Image 1 (cartoon, rainbow, N blue to C red):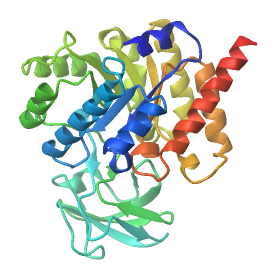
Image 2 (cartoon, rainbow, N blue to C red):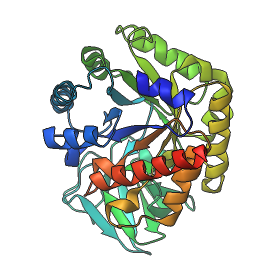
Image 3 (tube, one colour):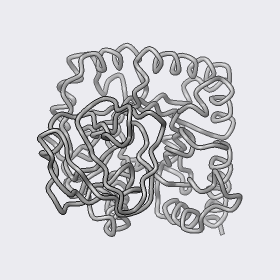
Length: 353
C-alpha cells in the first residue's frame, strides 16, 4: 500500500493505525477516522464481541472505505490473541470495580461474578499456580498493582492492592507469565473468511514460535501470499530475539503496554530504542503502540510527556503509530487524531529546516 512505502522512503511520514471500538464502530465513527488520515483500522479479536459482531463491523468499515474512495489505500487489520494470549478478568456486575489501596481482593477462576466482594473472575484454569505470596501482579497496563497474599486453592488466591484503582471487565491480568494460546479453529476459520489485509500476531518471542504460527495458519489458507503479517513485541525475550525473525514478517509493533509490565518498566525506553534501530537497519516498518495521546481525550493541551515522546519517536524514524484506548474506549476520539497530525506536520517542518 502507498502509505507503507511512503513511511519507509520519506522522513516523518508515519502511517496511523486506529483501534475500532464502541466510539467509532458505526458509519459516522469510521468516516471520522478516515477523514482524519487513518490508514489502518485495527480490530482486536481478543475483545469478547463474538465473530458475528466483528464481521458486521468489518463489513460496515469496508463499505465506508469504498464510499470514501479509499479502497486499496486503507487496510483492515485483525489483531489475534495468538500464538500468545493474555489472561483476562471475566464479567463483573458493573463495568469496573473500584479498589482502594490496602483492600484485599480475591481472584478465582471463572467467567463471571455477581458480587465483587465474593471474588473477581479470571478466565483461565488453576490461576493460583501462576502466583506465590509476596509477588506483585498488575491489571491492564499497570494502572493497578496488587501483592499476592495467599493461595486459597488451585483456582483462587487473595491479593492486597498497592494503590487506588479500578478492575474493569475483560482487562488483562499480568502474572509475569505468558500463556500459549490453544489452536482456535473457529477463530482461524473467521480470519480466513474475513481475508484481512494485515494480521497481527501476539507475544512473539522466537523464530520457532513464529514459524509454527505460520504453519498452523497456512492450513487455513492464510499465508504471506494473501496477507501481511505484523508481529507484536511484548516481552524482553521478544526484544532480545528480534534479529532472529525480523526478516520473516512485514512490520513490527512495539507493544509498550505489555512490554512495560512483562519486562522491567524502567527498560521500556531502551527497549523501544533497540527495536526501532533494529527495524531501521533491516528496512522493516516499525510501529509504536500504547499510551500515545490518551490525555488528549480529556485535556485540550495533552500531557507534555506524550507530546515529547511522540515527537522524539517520529524524529527517530518510527514508521507507524497505533492508537488503542484513544479511539476504542475513550471519549472525543477526533482530538487525538487532530493532535497527532499537528505533531506529525511540525516534525516534517523541522526536518525541512
